[in-house]
Figure 1 (spheres, one colour):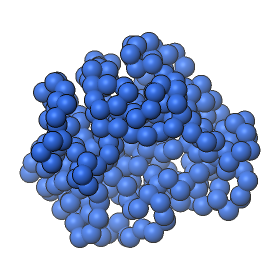
Figure 2: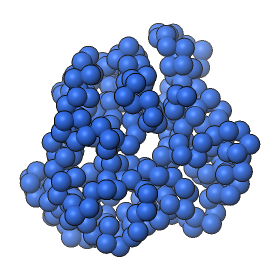
Figure 3: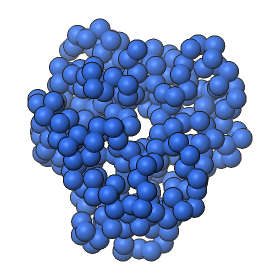
Figure 4: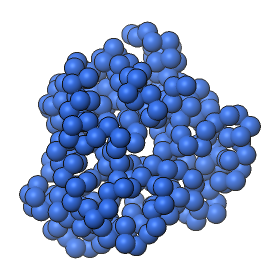
Length: 292
């Protein structure tokens, strides 16, 4: 079965239950959520997440809880060597996010590797490794994977090459809980050619190992290849194109992974139901949003 879904909201009053219901309304078989607003540290107690109600609902509708992906907030920057307080917040808050992810029952927590804030790539990578080691010392990861997201390389972002991701994985004391999230918009903007996706996968396999891939973010891009800007476009309406994204989604080497859409809202409305239907039909519809 195709594991396809999107980012959905987890907000009051139904939280996780509401998130699963939203995914169901899109005819999705997977979903991704944040435990709270990605721009801040304000979080409610997990007891209010309606986890048990969500689990019962998933049983009723046949939604596999294994297909719930969590995303850590953007404010976590493990690469910061300039401000010690930012690094302290990053690893301590990541520990709490791991606990929230485990309470929900998700097995994958997506994490942006971080930005070196003009301190340089080498210092930034070493700081990420230090932060991940600190996290692993403070919390029992169990079977949870922290999935380092491939980035576009804007500003001082790290993780925009497979080599940087591999360097982080090789540097930590124990990488058994360290996976990877492959984002199509990001790798395109970083310079990888999705017109030759098999070659990209082969490169990933050689440098990182396909067995370490945990989840796929499927987004088109508003930018030309190598722009290093990170601006998502709706599926088939950007520079990557529908056929190339469809190859990613249905690639046999990736069939076991969840594919998550993070595409822009259209006319202030979530596009995911229409995009997922188009993906399932395997036919691009240039007029997809005309009746929104």
